[in-house]
View 1 (cartoon, rainbow, N blue to C red):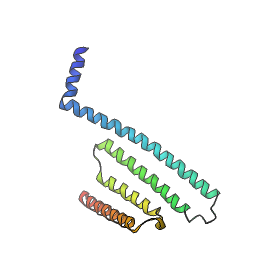
View 2: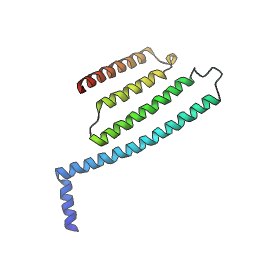
View 3: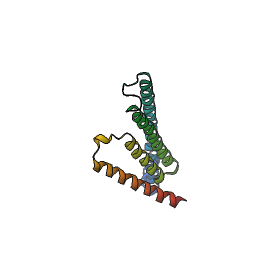
View 4: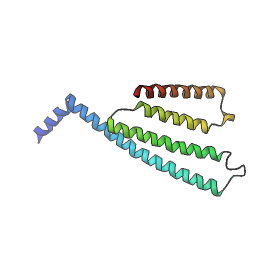
Length: 150
C-alpha cells in the first residue's frame, strides 16, 4: 500500500500527472458553475413569472407600458444572458476552450439589456458615450471573429 501511494505521489508530481490533476479540477469547477447557473436561471424564471403575474393582475395607474415593459424586457434578457453563460460553460466543458464568439455575443446581449432598461433622465452623457463605445467595440469584435471563422 505504501509503494502504491509513493508511485501515485511520484506520478502526480510528474508533468503528465500534474496536468491531469489540473484538468480534473477545471472540470469539477466547470460542473459546479453549470449547476449554479441552472439555479440562477430557475430563480430568474420564477422572478419573471411572479413579476408578470403581478403586473397583469395589479396594473399600475400609469399603464402597463411605462416601466413594466422595460422591467419585463430586462428580465427576459437576464434569462438570455444566463443561458448564454451556461452555454459558454458547457462549451468549455466539452472542448476545454473558451469560445470568444460566445463571450462577445453574451456581452452584446448584456449591453443591449442595459440600454433597454436605461433611464435616460438619470444617465449622464459620458455614460451614454461609454455605452456607445462598448457597443461599437463589441460589434466590431464580433464581426472580426465571425469573419475569421468563416
